Image 1 (cartoon, helix red, strand yellow):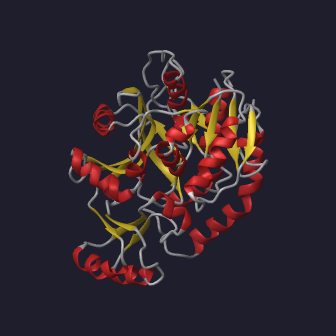
Image 2 (cartoon, one colour):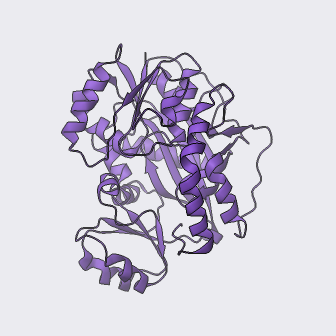
Length: 401
């Protein structure tokens, strides 16, 4: 059975998509890639079986996206396993499963759950319902609430675009942003629309916390098929955005917390969760729940060589998933982004990391049997990345958390 990688929005350099093509393509699974153009990173992989050029922005009406997706899926040789690589695609698949299931094999996730989990505010409400620790948060749905936030929250605070579709069509902030004072909040809010849908979140100090990630694949009943945990060491932009360097290490407490949330909410499929261990109270607090494959999923494997994408494919095509334990000490390096991240972190007071021995390095782009994604990435990212590094080092207020 083939696989269709589905995305909404413009991000031509996505190592999660490349990883999904490689991990299945190397096993002989036909993987078809939806891409913005012919020369995006996943579209040039030698392990892909097909490439469908379908540029989207995320501002299109859902019915148009569903119509196009039905046309794309129906053009494949047979029904395909759907793998979403962004939140918007995961929401689209869940909310329109009835219209799409003729041509796509989809996990039976509750219709509204991916949207609730991808929404920063609704995820916070779900955490409260299920007793999952999370930073205190409040949704700003009107600019009239700014005075209330400035009066009632302790600064600094973190600002995030709350809703997944809004972040593409009309983002209020470019990324997760630390605001140190009420005056800074007022200055930012001056440029917001009347209904900004910004989440104001309690700030968890970096000096008093450790960033963790958890990746899982859940079956139709919400039970864990495979579960992985690891530590995020660096990201770009610094302390926010995509992971550039991380390592795998088992964490039974975090794995149990993740499993409980997935089971109680009824989640099915692949998920990528960002947690922060607050050393002040010793609790893991959920920052983000991404209801789709995470970009760094190739960090994790079992000793039976199963990752979350392979587990998802086997589970929903009715095949057994080989038993195995998480391989500890694996590291992932996103080559083009970890170079500036290393520079940015060089003066940071990073907590000491003890990486378990025995794991190997996994590169996001470099692969001897698949060189073109790395070459395309190098060509497309060099100039904008250089501009961002210069801006980060010589000007501009840091935004990352």
